[in-house]
Amino acid sequence: MRIEQKGGAAKMIEIEKLQLYYGEFQALKNIRLSIPERSITAFIGPSGCGKSTLLRTLNRMNDSIPGVRIEGRVELQGKDIYSADTEVESLRKRVGMVFQQPNPFPKSIYDNVAYGPRLHGKLKKADLDELVERSLRAASLWEEVKDNLKKSALGLSGGQQQRLCIARALAVEPEVLLMDESTSALDPISTTKIEELTRELSRSYTIVMVTHNMHQAARISDRTVFFLNGEVVEAADTQMLFSSPVDQRTEDYISGRFG
Image (cartoon, rainbow, N blue to C red; front, top):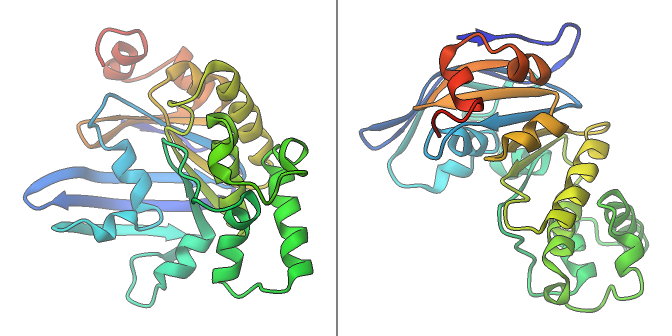
């Protein structure tokens, strides 16, 4: 197994000896991984290899699944997020998530973005107005919706809805953004917009993305991690992993021999 860390990059997330079980089934096996800040890390691998399971451990989304058991450490800026004193609500404010299918609330565009800040106590209208605009601008959506903020978010196109979900995640001012197959349900034009947006956001946020699209990983990620059967096979600079994989299994996967 090769795990290379880009020199000089500060670590946002450090994973040590992570094991995850669904009942008797072991879904993640001895995961060791560093995720640098303000960068895009892509998880690739065949279906069922553990990449989405690992993504969901980073903000404890697996906690609600019956029978899940986790061993090892997942540190966010040096603090174990599975320690007894971790407040999960606060963790999910710091580690936001965008899902495969756009999932706007059946509310107005404005109320979708304002939902999280209101939960966390930001109630002054002037503050909310400024935050909603800033979040929509960050998600490259403001110019398209600024005159329709009171209209239902469900009237937006699929690509617009996904960018709205990104704006909603950004509105609580996270440090990390998790993206689970966030373009797989979109058309090519919307996918390109989300990819360009993701690159732009990586200047300010740590982004971890799961993708089945190896070309997408090669286009936009800084580092790529290849998973197989619940294990990290190889993790390296994206260009290095795709051009000079060390493990034969990585070579076989990216060349299309399986998966």
